Image 1 (cartoon, helix red, strand yellow):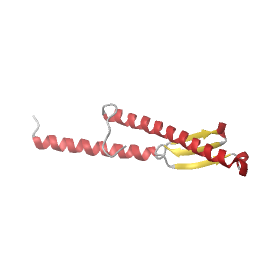
Image 2 (cartoon, helix red, strand yellow):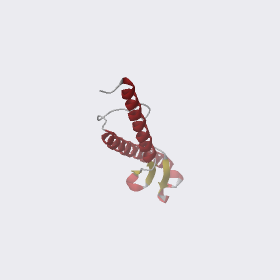
Image 3 (spheres, helix red, strand yellow):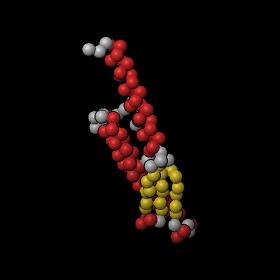
Image 4 (tube, helix red, strand yellow):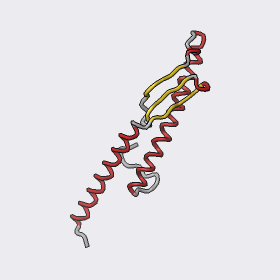
Length: 113
């Protein structure tokens, strides 16, 4: 039978391991990129799974002053599309990490969301 000190030490080690692995997942999320698209590809926004915008591409046909409002709407739509895809990628990566750690599905590790 393990002593209380041994159990506490084991719990602390497990918490440190989980924290380290979750930090690694968070760092990986900033390297996973997704692309949001709107207007049939006229506007594209690339961002990381953490939501950092990497690039914005706008088709030349939208550069006319008369297209300003449509361009603004398409940029917002492309961003929202990219954000939704980033959330999906982030959730999928977190689920893989939790399965690898043996944590129950949906477990929210404090400070990681």
